Image (cartoon, rainbow, N blue to C red):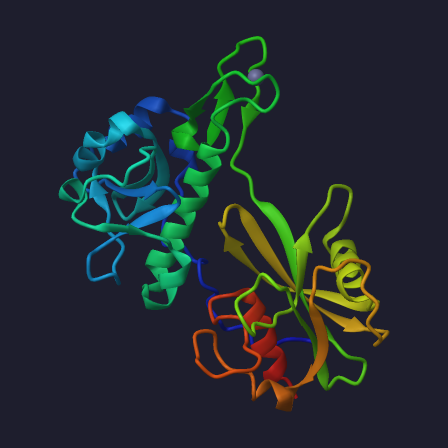
Amino acid sequence: MSITNSSWRLTYTGVALDRAAAVRPVQADVEALHDHALARVLPVWNGNHLFEHDGVEAKALTVADAISLRAASGDLIFLGLSGDAPWFALAIHTEEEPADVQLSGVFEPLHPRVGRLDADQAAMLAYARGMVLWHANHLHCGRCGAPTESQDGGHIRTCTDEACGYRAFPRTDAAVITLVEHPDGEHCLLGRQSRWPDGMYSVVAGFVEPGESLEECVAREVKEETGIIVTDVRYQASQPWPFPSSLMLGFTAKASTTGFKPDDDELDDIRWVSREALDSYSEMGDDKPGPKLPNRHSIARMLIDNWRAEL
Ligand SMILES: [Zn+2]
């Protein structure tokens, strides 16, 4: 099995910034960018992003506006350069949503509205979100418990206990997601978890564990969740998934067994689905009863649609 139709731009990929990593180590250089007339800041509050009131445009603040919020905010995190314009992310730590009068926008979650967002904006917000959430979860040293401080424009947090000095780097958690093809080549493996939206079916996914290759993880996750043995594990594409910190690594694999015998109860239902049967699966958000496909902004959907298009 090979998937050749990979012309999709996966949502949250392709951020249109020069990450300008060489600027990060010199604090004075990063601070000089704070004063740049074109500098813009993407605030993140309580996991939500700032949008225009019309709801279809992300809203960026000037550094001056962002600074006015900074009493209750974290460090400016340097994301990179768009042309000459430096872009930053900023975590706002207030319990209450910042007053609208300061922001003239509304804080809302990213993923539910991604279908209406420009792809470049979605990628930028995902990057900002991933960085802010990493900072929020690393305010203290994981080794000794002392507070950490932001360095390298926000791309390192260093322990303030000099005897420790532990440095933490932004992390992404590797997760595999796999479309498994039946030995007959005519069916693919889908399942659903009870906590998913009503009717939604998807492919098998799970986190990579220490001491495990990606291919081994694919085989283990498929076996645990379904009992199916797979071979011919092939990498396809990846998608940042900062909810809060995953990188989804998409694979295809070929089943060498067909009977379901899961080791765990992660999936409520498991089924082999033909290409023809997929035609009756509706879209998330449709009122239609019956099974639904994962939404179009997920790598799960890309894997399914590419397989459907194969002959
Ligand atoms: Zn420490």
